[in-house]
Image (cartoon, rainbow, N blue to C red; front, side, top):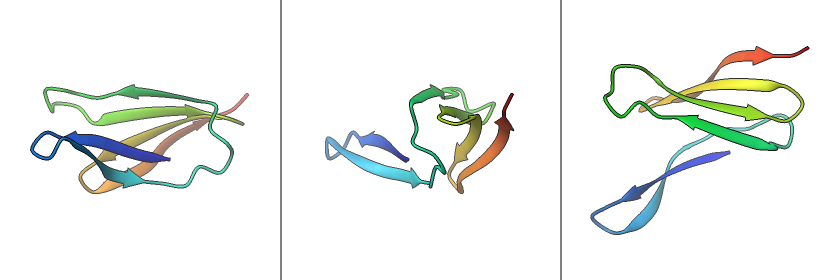
Length: 67
C-alpha cells in the first residue's frame, strides 16, 4: 500500500509512505486529522480489518481485528 499526497508547488503526487499488506487489500478507509491534534488513521480490509497509524515517521499497524 502506498500513501501519496499532492505537492501543490509542483502539482504532482509524491509518495509519503509505503507498507506491505499481508493479504490483498479489498477496501481502504482514511481518517486524516486536518487540525493535527490526533494521529492520521487508515483502515484496510482483506482477510482481517487492520487499523494503521501514519505520520512523518512512517506507517505502523495499530490494531488487527478478526472474528
